[in-house]
Length: 261
View 1 (cartoon, helix red, strand yellow):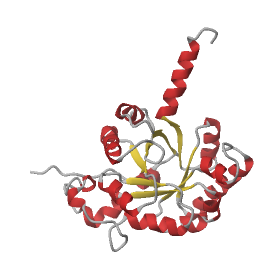
View 2: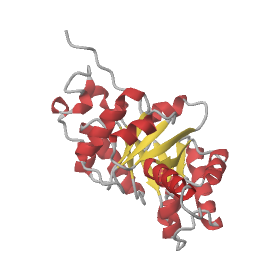
View 3: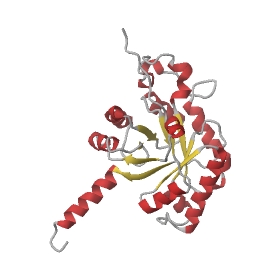
View 4: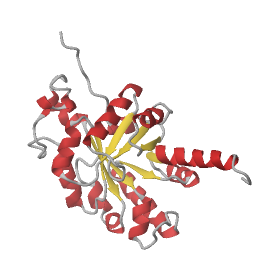
């Protein structure tokens, strides 16, 4: 007799049930061991980054499998807003996608369309062949597929901030994630994520998204600034990355035992 299979709750579900902000970390190294360390460290969620990390679909799949046992919510960031690519990521079992560089409501709507089967969207139907349905092991997967996925779009440009009210109003955009680094760069303030004008833009985005009733998150490796964002109403945040934590700890240790260190 087949084992009854049920997919984990989505990131949107986790945020809706959370009594406090969800704090997470990036998985950027591609290492399954590093992914397991992050997944078992006590974070509420993890971002598997397919935009800036050297990941193909096979790597993303291996990282999902490596972290399955730990119960942590995984969000996978895709490299570009592309219908075919979104279909592939969903089919391999990435339930929660983050789409970068969304500047307009039209771009947000395109991402939503790619997330869902017709008639709601344009996702190609191949669930019988895919891990998303556990190869048809999840009962009634197709009619309930929309309830098993969650879409986060990134606001990370001055243009996106100007359009945030229209972007967040798109049905099917579940969460907004603010990227202060690219936002600062788009404002002519490269590397100045805590510049007052950047902070003003971030906080404006927070206010608009919260007023819509949806959740807003942010990236901040500066832990003091991360706490300020959480205090200002961010419902979720990323505060570190596997590669950043390893490089920082390694350099600190090497410096401690270096002559003159």
